[in-house]
Length: 90
Image (tube, rainbow, N blue to C red; front, side, top):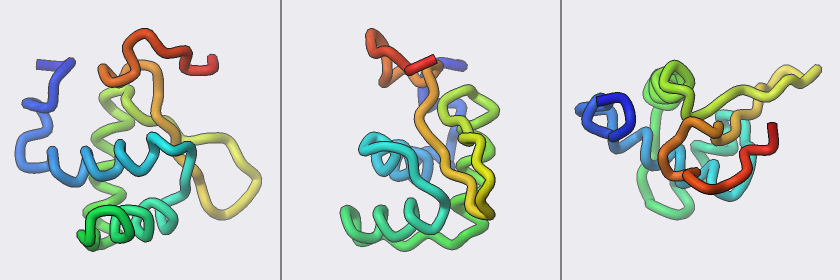
């Protein structure tokens, strides 16, 4: 099922935490990790974070932003079901 969280299986929890963090606006990886700890008390290792970001990107739910900096920020993309009826800015 492409539209729901079922396809994420055991990876649903990190994905939901990341999407919740990105709901406030674009963030790079370290900012996502610190935000997740602040609002949930759950600490994610970098491998967990970037693995989940990769899965979310493949599903079209997040996208990296072009930047000239070393850190690459991510934002919620228009394909995420939670964005239904919202303008994705593209």
